[in-house]
Image 1 (cartoon, rainbow, N blue to C red):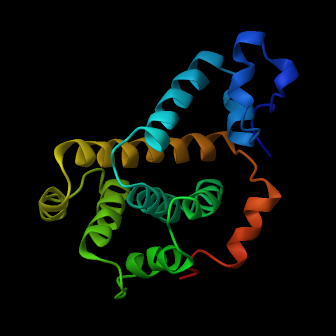
Image 2 (tube, rainbow, N blue to C red):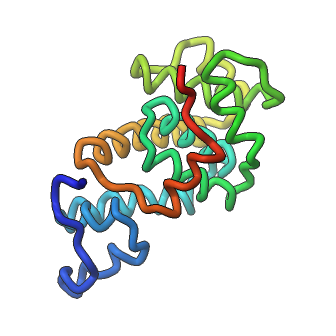
Amino acid sequence: MARLPYLDVTDLAPEHKHLLNRNINLLRLMSQSPKGATAFHTMGQYIRHESPLNPRLREMAILQVGYMTRCVYEYTHHIKISRDFGVSDEDIRAVAEETKGHATSLDVLTQAVLRAAREMTQGFAATDSTFEVLKAHLDNESLTDLVLIISFYNAVVRFLETMQIDNEPEYQALLADFPFDTN
């Protein structure tokens, strides 16, 4: 159960009603701070609609953060979102396999993106060797955005977990097909 109440669009001042254009629990709770939610929305919009980073790579990085942190909300929401950006069910399963150190059919760049997300989530920074692989495949703007995205979603999972935001049932159901490793 969430630590603060979820707001509805009727609870918001007219200038903040746009914050709930996507009526999900994360935004319903975050709207307790309209200015904070607006800043969050601005970064989220940039990441999803303006960043030059390949959207499939972006979503793979976000899935890896959700998987590593075992943040059900983030992981399941981005399972659904990622499918709209070219991520296959095989790709989603590969996140778990890569995390366990198993071989996958993912290309070198995607493997490096996942490795960077794991390293930044566990140890706060990508290693030199991972960064060099990314640098060999991405331009400076896309590489910078990748680091921003991984950092941003590590912040998002901390917000979700601290506020104990409830996952919506339609997203929760995705764990049946894409469970966390139980080991």
